Image 1 (cartoon, one colour):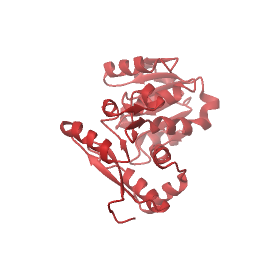
Image 2 (cartoon, rainbow, N blue to C red; image 1 turned 60 degrees about the vertical axis):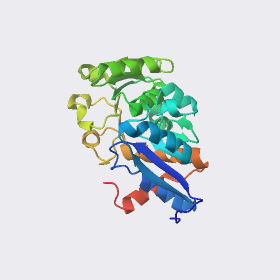
Image 3 (tube, rainbow, N blue to C red; image 1 turned 180 degrees about the vertical axis):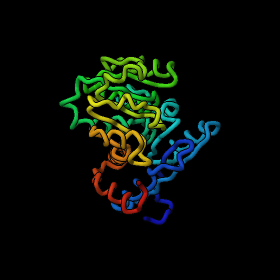
Image 4 (cartoon, one colour; image 1 turned 45 degrees about the horizontal axis):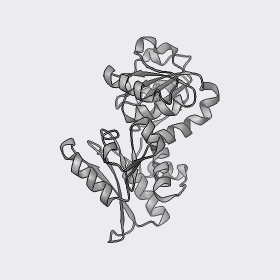
Length: 268
């Protein structure tokens, strides 16, 4: 790692109650490996300080990530939005004042190998925040029919309305009909929110955004039933590498990052 000096570029992640985040470990490792003079920091900011901190980070940071609960709230502070972020209505990566959604890009790429058997499948997405929006857009663009399950029905209805411009079939549902699902996505902080009946034998894929632990309760149950899984660690690393591509124009090996996290015992 470079010593911090006047030429050091500043990157980071903006969120609240995010002491768990692995983003600094990932990005500082990449900076070290490629010999780039930069540091990646955690900006854990309460909502009453968001306004002036967000403006300051846009000015002083070369780029930064955005996580809960600010993926939607950051948008009015940005000068431009990438097409994906504009359509989805959520931003998780900022570069020189421009907003992107690498959750969407990463989910779309990871889903690609399953697309041939699921392009007209029914997908139940649990949650209605930024990650849920990204997943709905990525899977909906591949032809999946999206069903949103969320504790706040109003928030789910707004998500469905916002995404109908790019997703042909999207509606609000509940768990009473989840036996029809071919794909289950957990985009909430609580994998136990999804009832066992949704993990039925006809399910073809589970996508989990939670990455600590890597084998969440949902992932364990899916593996026990022989259901293919895209886990939260895969999504975390894939979206981080997309952010690096936006910031620095580089392609860094996925396996090297995962190997580093394992070697440092930062994942379990």
